[in-house]
Length: 324
Image 1 (cartoon, rainbow, N blue to C red):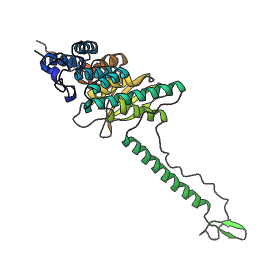
Image 2: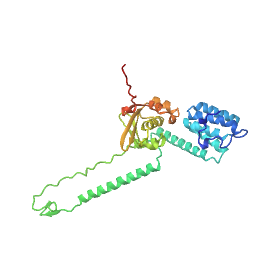
Image 3: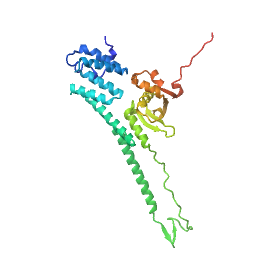
Image 4: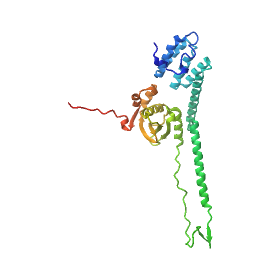
């Protein structure tokens, strides 16, 4: 019998979607497709890939096997091969909206990767595409800075052109009576607090984290320390959520996204307060990245983190001893 867990796949991955192709029946092909999908979910990509190829040798017209091969290649980062499998699936089932979306997503990733490689060769700083909300926020911020700058400049111009009274060639300030003339006082520009902006590199890192990391929409800042090369990703959590597991998953996914930082730190924020901080262990994170980490238990995820704060987040339960 087929493990029921292997059948837990989205509608577009269900082998019953288009049948098994020429010369096959659902009963013949469904168990093998379910097993291949289960292997993919467990991160055993090689066995899943080989099993799909064996299915296509028997039933070359099976759409689901083509789609599954595309998913396997996409998750491994082989975007060109994934694109080819999705295109072959659409040749067999042109009406498949799910395969069309997957093909568009892979092509977008290929385009971004090629642009990044070209920019790196030319020594140009790369700026990953931003979401509409992020772009709108930047535009609003720029407009706000422009309005404030205009108002400050207007006030300074008004001070310079302020009329003064002159009596017998001696310049005095308005509303001053019978007082000796004083030398003009040099006034400094208004010492208002400057607006702190992210550096262009940190802005690009933030956009890259939001787009590419697990739960990227939670990430609100990406701060890079130029002295130590430590990159800190701050993410938002809600009351009742497990900020430790979320931080571990973000850190594990970020290991494959960023290559320049010497170290990576994840920092959880809830209601404006820091609730969790940890360092990411690169070697362990890379291993877990290839194990379908999103479905791993918390105990396994936490092995990718070290130097946890608060310390009680990782402290073992106290042991009690009794004397007879």
